Amino acid sequence: MIPSVLPTYNRAPLSFDRGEGSWLITEDGTRYLDLGAGIAVNALGHANPDLVKTLTEQAGKLWHTSNLYQIPNQQRLADLLVEHTFADTVFFTNSGTEAAELAIKMARKYWYEKGHHERINILSFEGAFHGRSTGAIAAAGSEKMVKGFGPLMPGFVHLPWGDHAALRKAIDSHTAAILVEPIQGEGGIRPLPDACLKGLRDLCDETGVLLILDEVQCGMGRTGKLFAHEWAGITPDIMMVAKGIGGGFPLGAVLATEEAASGMVAGTHGSTYGGNPLACAVGARVMEIVADDAFLAEVRRKGALLRQRLEGLVAAHPAVFEGVRGQGLILGLKCKAPNADVVKAGYAAHVLTVAGADNVVRILPALTISDAEIAEAVTRLDAAATALETA
Image 1 (cartoon, rainbow, N blue to C red):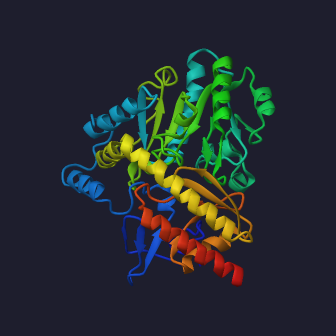
Image 2: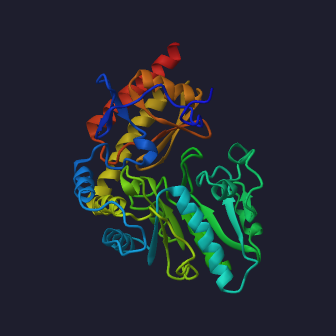
Image 3: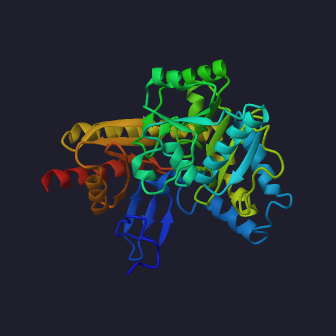
């Protein structure tokens, strides 16, 4: 008999009663050090006092009105995002998947309004993940995500990761945009080198193609810059944001230049819940904290410390681990042992990680993780690796 919750998840045999910063706690009081942060969502940790205060104050006033009316918190958050990024305008969604849908629509509408109705193709890359809607899985194109869900939305061209010649060859008179993650998250924490990101921007400028960046997992301070593309010194035309932007409250956004968004006028897109007062109150507080230069400097420092400790872990367990990938606090342990076994061994050591593609274990802690918790995390990962070696 099918369970009352649709069985689309392979859940761990764990449930949690509460959270405190970098820790999740079961009903019986067992504490787990959380290096997954809800898959890079709880950027400021569990039950962050600032966010709890912001949410409860707003909850006592107004939850929802819909976008039929002005929403001051939405305007405030949009202004903060415009102030701190390349963007001229922002549309709020409830998730990264919804952000992907709008980014696709926005790129195609841009060319339609310019009279180039044939420019519908969006170039994307092997290993990508942009969400699980029909449009987003069509954009990624992997068999694992698309099998059984056809017919798929047309207009996507899938290219090998890192094949510059294939990318240049694929751009033609039907190309609307290039869609890429500066660091692939689900794909196994694969960073796009800064030189490649600069090359993409140059190629888009040369051909007129729009550059769409998916910073759903790698954005909102996770690399030590507010957004990962800043390391390369470039800007996109359209950017997808979610996960960390709400600090645990469901929230996403599409950021765009005025030019790229020029086709999106009244009636072309909408959302009942998107940008509601609750979400935007929390999102604005997250932005105020995460966009601070001192906060980002701390993320960079802690990221370097964690990476150093993880490199030592890899050296100590060459039969289990192969190397460390990533930047800031979006890191990946490339495994020799099956990554699912590493994650499972972590449960026994009371440390939580997240599996990714390419046999990688993702390390995505709260950006507020302390030095002591970093040391404890590596101690527990060491215990998990030792258990695998002696099993």
